[in-house]
Amino acid sequence: MGLLAEKRHQYILEQLRSNGRILVSSIAGDLDVTEVTVRRDLSLLSKTGLLKKTYGGAVLPGPANSNVSVRFRHTRNIQAKKNIGKLAADLVKNNDLIYLEAGSTCYEIIPYLSKYKDLTIIVNSLNLMRRLHELTRHNVIVTGGQYRPERMDMIGPLAEAAIAQLGGFKAFTGADDISRSAGISGADVATVTFTKIVLKQAATVIFVGDRTKFDKPALYKIADLDALDYIVTNKPLNEKWLKIARKKNIITIFPK
Image (cartoon, rainbow, N blue to C red; front, side):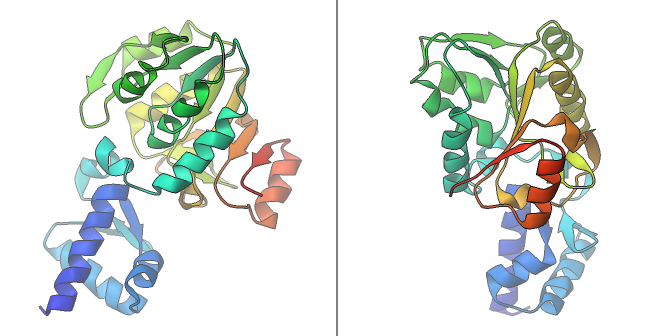
């Protein structure tokens, strides 16, 4: 194996650990090589058990593909998430009751909440709770539940029972993917189960996610697009997305 191949393999594995999945087309573009070369690399890495090939790309082997560490998620598309966080925070008003999903995009909403008064903020994430600790003017509700160190969140029956007792809130959810045909979906079944209850109890549902989240449905469906009131992202949506958003009365927000 030549040095260039070693560097490609290292990059592929770094992207998998950070994002949980990769696409052949994206890796080929990043590395300025052909898709044939990337597929050959994936085949070789698959034989060693370091990844699992999928149609058009690859995921981490076994259940690890759904447990991407919090610290890796926060290194992905940081500026895009900060831009989304600022736009999403503009949907909040004084005295609002809001829920923030335990993800890296919702994490970037928090700094922009300091300008509001008397918010009640619901979280199931120790990571978000640590950042919210600085906003002493607001009330914070933590759901409790089974703690997962790799995600720094809380899920399971206790968390589900807690969120089911609440209602009337604005829910900011990142999910893993959003698709015109499949709605929003996730790769982790425990998170999906919890999120379904969140959306059922919410008065307003706001999807927040950068453009890499679009049109790549994950394994477990959370909800149809009809469940959404807003989509907040970092780049303009194409006409197909704008058309379906208008049809379903979803307000789309992105930088102009």
